Image (cartoon, rainbow, N blue to C red):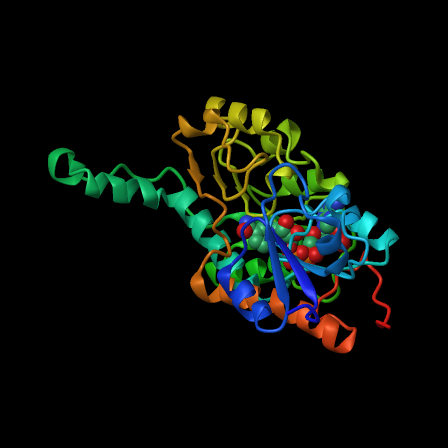
Length: 321
Ligand code: NDP
């Protein structure tokens, strides 16, 4: 009906977002390929956006009466928040509801990388246990590791807490140290890489985090060293990582995220010492449902109360109306 507020959904989104928002808003679904294709009358009716996977300045400017952009995901690097802020548009993300899932995945990926469990399962399934005997011993173990976490925010802290019972040494690097934590703080990534043998990256995609995991950092981790990435592929120099894994400068790596998803550099696919996941860190039914609810609730709260639940720090929240 025409007096309902219109909410734009470009491309695909979790069905629960559509189901929840459809109860009180007019959902306008559009393809994301080739930019915004909406007639002027509809464009003028759009006051909210729910989106998974990016909303740039061109999209923002196609909607003159836009008030809120609700991003599905805690990382909102696909949204031009600076541009949204300049237009007084609020951007929201989905923090906290995925911390446990992503931290669990980081631990699982670390163990898979160290102990080669995915390869061991393939060994069984392919009948090699029967034909060739026991699966080869894993070269690495969790025991006695010194682990450095690059980024100790909401998710990084949950990863650190999960590492405690493994009796490993735990340190972290962020731009500013966090108060009263029992972990060693390193003011630079390089100092941390020199002091640990295992690096877990969980930093956002920002201009400052571009390819910070480079040849120098990887060689500091050493031949016994392991690199795990559950943050963003943007933070890694893939050529350097593929070279380091190939020539033994680095022991092994586990990656859930890539520079240009879903494209994975072919160099990784032929390496035996890398464990690869297709960006599944938060991808369980319960956690994705919680993320979908938070996207819907941000839009609902904005139009009901003029105050979204989880705005990002870059965009202003001034009461509506
Ligand atoms: P937070 O904002 O809570 O934490 C970010 C952390 O990174 C902070 O500790 C921050 O500390 C640190 N950081 C930011 N910039 C830098 C920098 N230039 N150098 C060093 N440290 C930096 O975010 P979350 O923990 O909620 O999420 C982190 C990221 O993880 C998301 O932005 C997303 O990209 C990614 N992610 C990936 C998922 C997956 O499916 N694989 C799922 C969920 C999230 P300080 O500001 O002091 O530097």
